[in-house]
Image 1: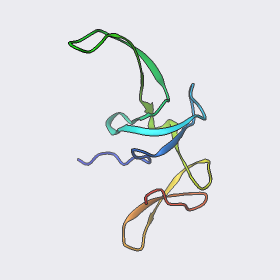
Image 2: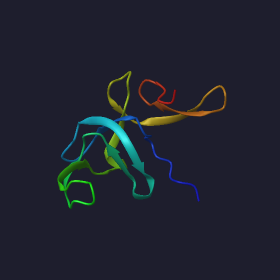
Image 3: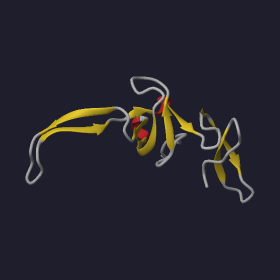
Length: 108
């Protein structure tokens, strides 16, 4: 079975639409399709208490936790607004994600 098709990819710039980090933006670091989550740089930062293991030092670490995919929208570089995407077929037959408002392509 193939994986889920999500509207964002790694290294996209997204805006958070709900929650404590609403209207903040950041770069997508990783995607978890099975849990419908994305990890965004500097968003949803949580503290974890870590025991020392081997040469690693213990303590309280801050790291990003996943945000549900439905709570992020792609940020259009041309509009500079959070937008929905539409899939269009290019001249060479490949599919690309485009901005619904201005038609700017996200897949270069």
